[in-house]
Image (cartoon, rainbow, N blue to C red):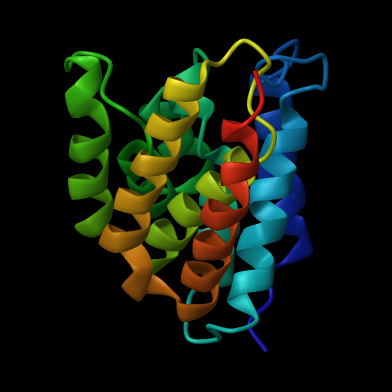
Length: 182
């Protein structure tokens, strides 16, 4: 069985908790670290079905996946603390803010595809978690656009893990319940 070393998990979790300190999940008052932990949990579950993957790499990338994109943490700091493979994975999971917004996801997916299946799995786990109840201020158009982007993620990365691909497909289907709300 492919399990993450608890010491590796705790070190990355503590780093992420410190980096995201004070941040909230959009549209609510839940601490952002909750999202990070849920992405790591989804990743760990998928690893049970893909024992050939490096659990330590996948879980560290899951826990740190938003640190470069959403905090003051730099890729160099990630590399110093967790190594170049983790830093490279986290950087590929981060959108490039220098690109126009419509191009950011395609660029990120291109970089994720050049990375390992562990990183691809984390991106799908992240979107599974993000396809829960959307922020109350999102319009139906925004929700549909987010779902459509999830379909692109699924089509692009599905090969990384059959299990996580099926989970993402189920979550995409379930997400349509939010289109009728407004």
